[in-house]
Length: 121
Image 1 (cartoon, rainbow, N blue to C red):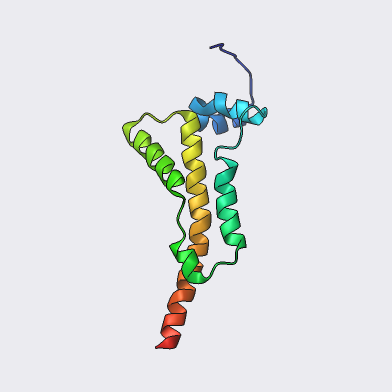
Image 2: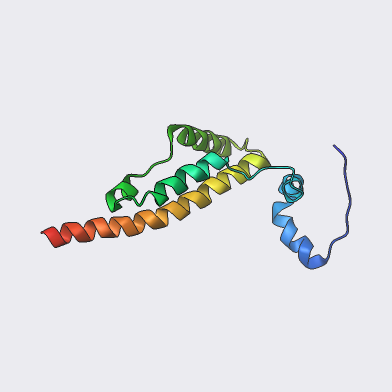
């Protein structure tokens, strides 16, 4: 691997310090050499589900595909073992962001489900 030394402003250096071990991957991604951390199919699966206008209970029950669940489990296990590469760390972060996004819909849907149950009582 080639080592490159660059000069950056102090403010930027402070921002880069926490991601120092991920700099090669970040530079490659910034230069367009690497696709998004998650496959397009993952985003498509979630967006197609949300665009289908699911009922609140369907939203509450929504889960990743078995392949997605297996990949997430693999990444979490590697993370626990301390064997996660920088690219895998970015992928796991992307899954976590997507999970938080979907969770917001699920929280609202659960409120709607509970409200309809209380209204029926």
